[in-house]
Image (cartoon, rainbow, N blue to C red; front, side):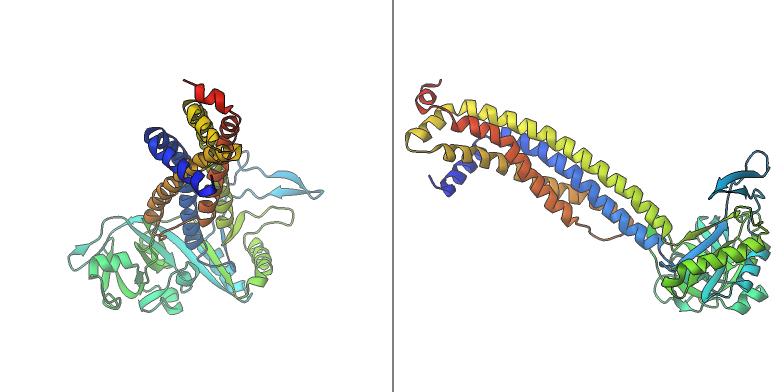
Length: 424
């Protein structure tokens, strides 16, 4: 018997035991589907994180209020750091408009500085009898807000320094807003129209390109207005602290830019030499790095789940192959009686185990990719195929087949042909 004869016989045997084969294939497919499905979803999530939270690029950072920074009723605490005592600043004061504007004025490093203030997420926009649901996000910003937050102007213009300094009632609207109120199509159509935001009139000066959604939440359902307009009209719902965004011109100088920013803002915030900064500086890619680290743990969990399932499948496959050896004892004796060698019998059982495992791999990979791409569809990241894990799935299933089939194949190959032919 040559290899093709052995392979053909193994294939016919698998077809002849359809129910047993189907159950084993299903168990293996579930293990591979779990492994591939979770990793497909994780890859989609990773892509979305990269798109969503790196809008300023690696050369950007933000300065924000250190929320809930309080110890023992506002008393100053001391801690050891590098051999010297540092006081922890405990003023618990939000960043004020004056502090943010003073930083923007004093920070002379080659970079763009933006000031922002969140107004809230439950606003209504209306024009000529048409209105949105009360789910619109209103953000207060300056002339640099659009660039620093990863948006692009599609129609009209950006807010100017004069718009900000003079406190004009102007706004830039996201795609969801102008599609809902002005109709999809020409992004210039809303420009110069008077849009009412919670009944406050704002002249539309620009429209934004679509940025899609993150975890089902649209990033286009936004209206950007000058931060002073937030203070003037929406102080009741606004955040209690301003945020500062900075985008350095050169990525190589980002650490120097951060160091200079911290030094200037410590003076503005009146932090003493021995006092810890009562504000935080976040690099734009820091959140992505942290999120990807957590996603790495998810990947490890997926691998563990997949391997546990496949281990169970391997044990099940080995038991089934051992039963097959017992059931086909006379067949093995016949093969040996007509000149079949031990290697022929061994390869037949090994190939059966490997073919069953690879069938499980095929169905598991297809199912896993389809299930994982449900998450990808929800996140609008396009069709994702984790090719590395597809290859790993095939390799793992081949190893499972070899491991599960080795002992039954060895046992079958060692059968005495005379005793095997007498077996009832």
